[in-house]
Figure (cartoon, rainbow, N blue to C red):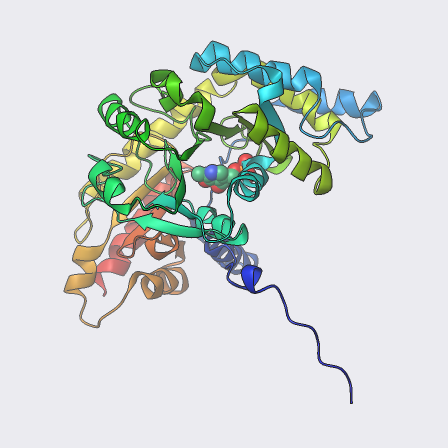
Length: 398
Ligand SMILES: Cc1ncc(COP(=O)(O)O)c(C=O)c1O
């Protein structure tokens, strides 16, 4: 008899594949069949990477920067990140307290592996970016979700709910401002309330600030700037995907306590090894330009947000609040679902809207918030106007 196939990892079997990637793939497949799809599921800026950045990479390739580089990032790149954190965020991190890696995603994955022991709880406020829970599970931890506040725009995170979610097993919390999927930002009042509470805990604080440049109404402030006493437990995560339109280049980094950075670097030395050196050279240039690199494009994003928001505010069956950052609007479709002739949930609604109206919107279920649809306005104005007309038609036909 043939021996049985050995079992798979029970831990990794609990990891689910990314639902946003799946929807985007379906939308792209429809478009390939020749269907005009209004794709609001995209999680990346639609602007090209600035030419000057591309030119740096080409020059670096031609100069032979094509071999392995040091794990965790080369000296020049780490220095450029250190200078950026000082210049733009008012934060002091020596290059030895910074690790660069293959996108914020890999960085977050390695942070999870570095900090979590089996059964440790990690608090994740809802609605959350899809990968946080699965990254915690992959590391052997248990994600503990904070319920979404009733009005996330006014109160993106409820500190009282946070206090209630804390247990003796809590080891970390993941913060994300500006946020994917809701576009919310922590204002100074919330930062103070949150920081004051976190000072009373002994948790790791993982702060994902990847949408920092997409802040439209008030500048992004890192919690660490207001609470420097958290430095020995605070890990800042950022990258060039969103703020420099460089998603495909896969450049992310983290800054934090030396002992944590060492583990993240060690893990990288056994996984991806390093960022490609020619990409690092281009990234060094991009990070040196800071928020000036895409200033014009961020202005365009803000105009799109205002356009989409204006249209949604007039649409029957939906509720929207003003998001202040990232490039998403989290549409509350619960009124439309309540009025629907046949009972339908947001997963089925998203599928129906794609098949019948050819609009791709990610169901809030993917982010721990059923009853909502996430709209990415990283697309042109004609797509926004045309697609939202279809959304109105789709909802009124329910
Ligand atoms: C909140 C958030 N964090 C991290 C990432 C990962 O970014 P990267 O492209 O650097 O891996 C994303 C990408 O969608 C995101 O939305």
